[in-house]
Amino acid sequence: MPMIQLTLPTGVLTTEKRRDLQQTLAATLLKWEGAPDTAFFRALAWSRIDEVPEGAFVSAEDDLPRFRVDITVPEGALSDRRKEGMISQVTAEVLAAAGLGDSDALRVWVLIHEQPEGTWGAAGNVVRFAELAALAAGQRG
Image (cartoon, rainbow, N blue to C red):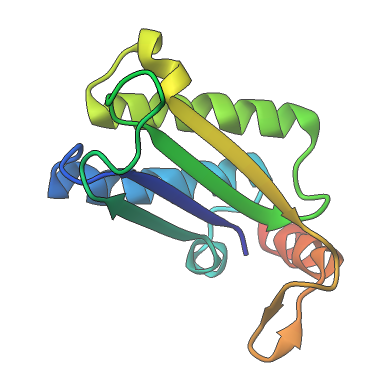
């Protein structure tokens, strides 16, 4: 049940690019989390893109567009290697969608939030990482 949220200035992405990127980011999240590519896990991978007014999301240096990606996963879902891989891939995907190159990579920040065990709920129940891992293993086998 991971979530990925991109915040960026309005107008940086076309409607089509935004829609495509939203699907791509969700798939990338599942890939690096190690979840199987099944309808069940795709339905649990939420992706959201929030646009803020032009000029509302800049640095102290300039008014070039900035991109913040917030990723929320259950604690223990990502090893250091998986975090590094996800950060690299998500950064590349955001840059590509915005028509930017590697020299703009510092304008993309990726923040990973690990939700402590017992603090994530769905369908009125606490969802435990071990339960998700067991479901994933069953859907892979």
